[in-house]
Length: 417
Image (cartoon, rainbow, N blue to C red; front, side, top):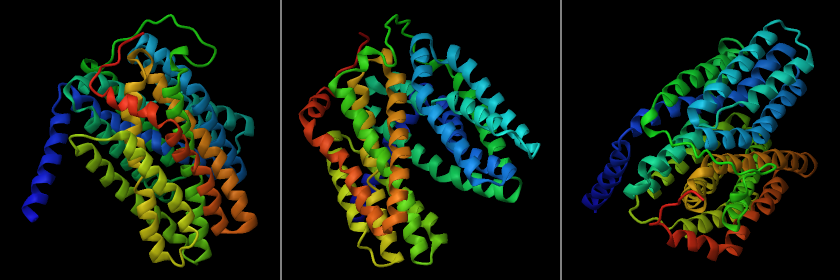
């Protein structure tokens, strides 16, 4: 039995070694990870910076909200330019603006009395020009690994890196901002993005060729307006509902049980399980993305309702580890299907629209679940969260055959329209 498990472990590890051994892969994977860590830190770092200068959580929350909204609204349009003109030509312009805006926010807040409109404008400009690191890296993996049969493993590696950076990032921001200075977290975040993006953009071997497309659309490229992409868009909106509400509900649960300090460790436990689940999925030789997504989505939805019945903190550690541990089993197969649902010429903007859908869901759910918990208690917060998240398995069930068709096309390469 032990020998069998060891064989599986070494086979899985070997698959990831193969992925990182692809020409140019490690050259962009490592700097992209550093840049993604910086992006994962930035939103919370803005909160700490503004709150430290103003003493107002209201102003800090408004700045963070403007940052997130600007990122969700403008990001897809920058991604359209990236698909059309190439990563280096566009990101080499947008990232310096991001760095200057973020640095200006640090300087403005250092004056201790920045005007509110200045803070909001700089936070908005920072959000609008935040680099879509995940989309940039995914496009490079598509070029590097698509013809090798290793793309699912590559996406699993990306998903696990994403879990890791969004686990480490908030902890790093909180530690640095609390012990050094409120704006120190933002300085570190900007530095990570600057160094990481220089490394990524100089990795020219893996950069996708620009499409030079002349396709026009008001907001979205018409090639994205199809049932397959819209299914994945709605699915990520529903995942945003989960992300936005679960942190509020877990925190409210912890406070209600006089264990507020354990809210972070409870969330951290689920992140570790999700990371391991994602790596296990990616190591499988033959993934079943549609079935995996639907099963994991069902567990998340029913699990949220079940968490309303948890009587104490130890069981919440276990219960949320199961529920949150399924997150990677939705996001990684979704990335795999998105690659098959979109042509290469619009892939960066497709990834960015997916992220924007999640951001909208997060903003909406955090507000709704926060209000429900304030008025009715943490148990109802979990029940309402389950109701919102039910959009995910419902969407996947309704469009099951559409997604199965994509799954059967696993061996075909998407070509530009």
